[in-house]
Amino acid sequence: MRIFSLTLGAAFLLACSAGLCAADDSASDAKVDDDRGPQTGRLSFGWASVDITPEEPVAVAGQYHARITDKVDDRLTATALAIETHNGQGAIDQAVLVSCDLAVIRTMLQDRVRKLAALRLPDLDVEKIVLCATHTHTAPSITDVTQEHHPYDFMGMWAYRIPEQGVMRPARYVEFLAQRLAEAVVGAWKNRGEGSVSWALSYAVVGHNRRAVYADKRAVMYGDTNDPNFSHIEGPSDPTIDLLFFWNRDKEISGMAIAVPCPAQEVEGRRSMSADFWHDVRAVLRKRYGAELPILALCGASGDQSPHLLLNKQADARLRSRRQLERRAAIAAEIERGVELVWEDARRDMHSDLRFQHHVSATPLPVRKVTDARYEQALADYEAGKHRRAQLNDVDFMKWRVSRALIARYKHQQRDPYYSAEIHLLRLGDVAIATNPFELFLDYGLRIKARSPAEQTLVVQLAADGGGYVPTERAVLGGGYSARIDDGVVGPAGGKVLVDYTVQTIREMWLD
Image 1: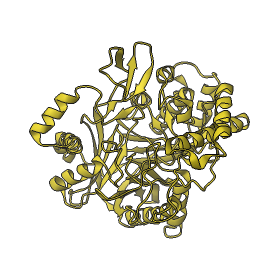
Image 2: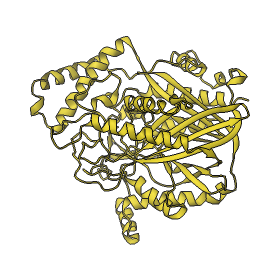
Image 3: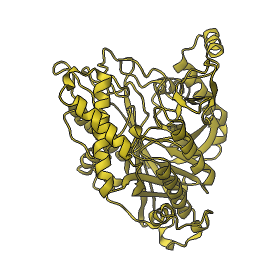
Image 4: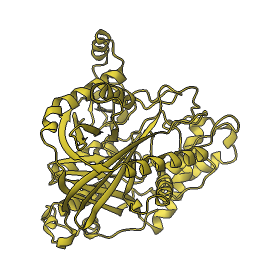
């Protein structure tokens, strides 16, 4: 796990978690040294994409039961965007963002990529590399059942039993993956050239809240809304998408970054490899804007969101039938329209000299503590299954691993009640980019956007690690999958600290 980095912002959030800060945002007026502020510099950037599809069958990540791939529906991609600004004195700051058609990122994968990149890029601060997952549930598992993991390594428990023969083990895929991702980082960094960037907020209906609430206050992910006791959908959805357009010296489009507050899970139950709707998005945008156009696909805060509909299913199906569109293609068409809506505005608003700053921290967030009662239950379940693991079905085996993980978390939280979250905060002109390693419920992303001083704020989840869900207080009260203690290391208290820290640090970047 990461060593804590107690910046001014981190000290602020620790004080807030201890109840020492006022309820308003007056602490954001704290002074910082002038040399910490962002400097204006000339923008340069580079792109690279690599194929990360395994050529052998693998275990597929994202469900309680094991799935072994039987085919490849579409290739998995990783796309890297390297950014640097410089002035007469040299480089000002750097970043390499890597979007991956994966379910999650783990710290051990990111560390491996950084080590490989450091061997070939002495002029890049490899701590400025951040890997991000699109959260497709039709990509390889990157956790091996034979490996031990830290009690707060949430994805370390999410491992499947897979056949001994004929299937690529997750550990071997991870090494293949790390090599490919390092290639993308190196390629993007070496492809840097001067150019411009523009940004825009647009609209596309992609994600929908997936938690149904009933008359007894109980919440169920993908619950039946036809039930007479159905009351309401638990939380909001967000129809906005955040767009960054990168232009070369000739003012031609060089690539796009697109942040959508929805995981790539339209075809999540399949046994095949697929980039899900991002494959379709790349296809339609490349047909319109350039055959080799790089697309940095970013998953916005969407722990309680999904492309699946809970309401209006029949009407939606009828509309798509008339248009002869599958759901994936319909989603891609929505995003294409969102890009088209702001395309001409973006072309008229290019910026080549701008402020750029990239802040990285290992930020301590209070963990959601396993209660004595949940510990006792986990201990009983663990003991009941430990001598008959071979007889457990896939779902019960995963639940047994969850019980084992909860026991380890319960013991570790007595000594260390904080999860160290790697957080990247960037200022690019008037845009802020804020990452987090969680499946972050949408409410938290909206809070960050509402309180950020930036003209536009991109919130990017599942970056640098996979800490599980961060549910809201109302979700915890409703219960159900994604809101239980089983489903994430950090709860609502940690979510509040994350928001406060993120907003405070962005505000520091906007101090002149």
